[in-house]
Image (cartoon, rainbow, N blue to C red; front, side):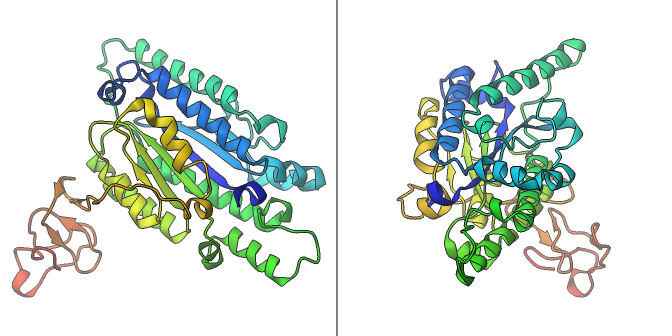
Amino acid sequence: MADADGDLLVLLLDLALLRPDSAAASALDVAPAEILTQILAFVNAYTMLSSRNCLAVFAGGRNMCHLLHLGLGEGAAAAAGGGGGGAWGANGGAHDEDEDMGVGGGLDGGHGASVFPAAAVHGRLSELIARCSAAERADPGRPPPPASFALSGALSRALCLIHRLQTARQHHPMLQPDSQPAGGGAASATSSSGRAGGGASSAAGGRRDRVLVLYGSSDSPMQYIPVMNAIFSAQRAQVALDAVVLGAEDSSFLQQAAHLSGGLYFRPTSGRGLLGVLLNNFVADTGTRGQLDAAQALGVDFRASCFCHKFVIETGYVCSVCLSIFCRPSAACSTCGTEFGGAGAGTGAGPGGG
């Protein structure tokens, strides 16, 4: 259970949801300020559920992603008090761009600092939005950037952070959610090591680290390859990718991410019901919510984007060596250089084959 063992959640927030001209907010007839209020209420509810819960919050836009908050819960404070702070400082520091958001080393190890994180998240988020607005005003002749989200970069940063924390658990027993007092037996050691490594033991226990994406942009076909690479990395690391899409249409990327990683995907029909969706489906850990009845929409859009023009296609040509996808036939694969021989010579691979 999450209240006894703790949970790790990385929240990725699309800043397009909070723009005054947010298309997602307009489509759902809700003000961006109301969306933010519901998100902050969820952040507080999640950390209040257990003092051992770990929460990281990233916010990003078209070409950036910043860490706004990183609270490691009660276990991290105990580890730091036991002399583990040196290792955290050496291996846990955030990227330089995060220090601009006031996160410093990226680790809020103190227990009291992470009980009610909404105020800190709101302050750093306001600072980030003000910085973005100032950059737009500095160049008034430049057209406003399109409402898009660097999804691939955000997922990569989230997975790197999760891997860093998993590695830290191996060196700090107090940070392992399943840790028990000495003499707890081999079963306890096996459970903790499996949880830290993200292996089969974690899957068997039903509780996994999670990434929750709050998305308000349209999918960019240019991101198809890096996004799929991030999804496969999360699948390999036993990390569940959850998504809540606020907009007029579904996200094919996030549908596939949730399907392949064992996460949940929701697209609320009302922006005012966002908090209910978050509390009912994402405040509990994966082991607990496995016992709940989550009403998932049927159907996943598995269409791919071609590697040559980034078009979304239903039928294409696939290289039998590197599995690159193309919308038009060719004599050789532009990715790996393989020449297509036999019946495909001069025309490339046939539809669905190499």
